[in-house]
Amino acid sequence: MDVRRSASIDEPLMYLALRVDGEDDFTGPLVAFVRVALPLDQVEEQLAGLRRVVVSTAAFAAVAALVLAVYLSRRFAQPI
Image 1 (spheres, rainbow, N blue to C red):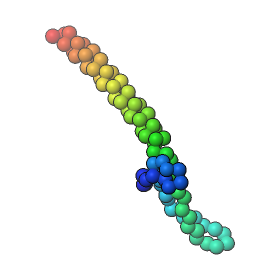
Image 2 (tube, helix red, strand yellow):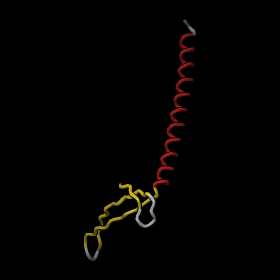
Image 3 (cartoon, rainbow, N blue to C red):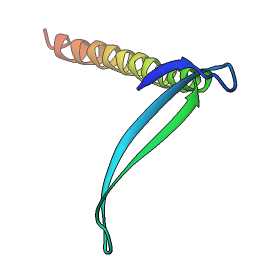
Image 4 (cartoon, rainbow, N blue to C red):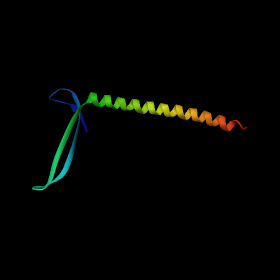
């Protein structure tokens, strides 16, 4: 992966290039390269959304664990 400013549209883009190996019935082995690019703003938006999901899930799990801990501690402390 590489992040750089595009010369053609003058915007920061994230580039990814992958090698694709394959076979052809006529010529035998084939090698191709696939390159894609996304605007860095779009990548950052997706990461921000993912961060929101992770933080929300962690907060929900923490609250659920706290509620369960309070319930269990009261239940076990009652007989004493």
